[in-house]
Length: 265
Image 1 (cartoon, rainbow, N blue to C red):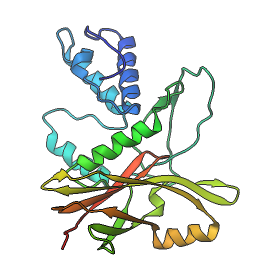
Image 2: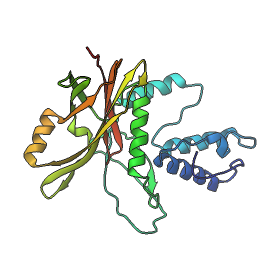
Image 3: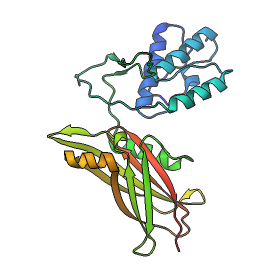
Image 4: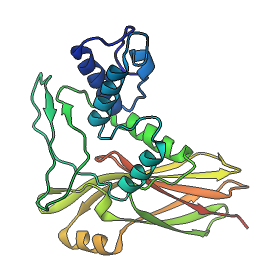
């Protein structure tokens, strides 16, 4: 639930801002927000009020609002948007006791380009625990029926040399991770997690390794051309059918995964 509470319907513009702020804070904290509990759709909320609330929520979260009788158009638009989904990161100034809402505007030098983005952020929003956030995002990627696509990656696997062991070679698309220039080097922080499954359930313990990047210019160019290589040996429990390899960017908070079949002899 959102870190705020409201039990009555929304009758004033100020409550709209409270709703939007709560939903935005909940989104950034990685929590689900219940609109019905917040009062949307309850007795006293007019159709115009309900629509205005959902439109505001969509704008704050970087989406678009569609009526419930236009699902086909919404689904088609979502599929089209997915083909042009990009992550842009930048460093905002850190100000003490900053409780203001800061608007964000993204423009393009090309004419006719329209961006659908978040409208802004709150300066005093506390950062979630990095390890807990990583665990939540990677766990969701592990349980998902589909592979995550925020980080492009390929995986090669070979069995051995020890019994019930597998050698993984992961190649990560370097353009999908965040590297920070520092003293003529490029630095980043990733993790790689491996989860073996049998009959759709995780079997055995997952394996997670930290991947700290500190590239020279030559190493950066090579990885950009050939892919960032991650090598790891993991144990393979009996009856394993697949292994899902997941790469998480601790700076961007994004994840990619690929699932490969693995069968012990």
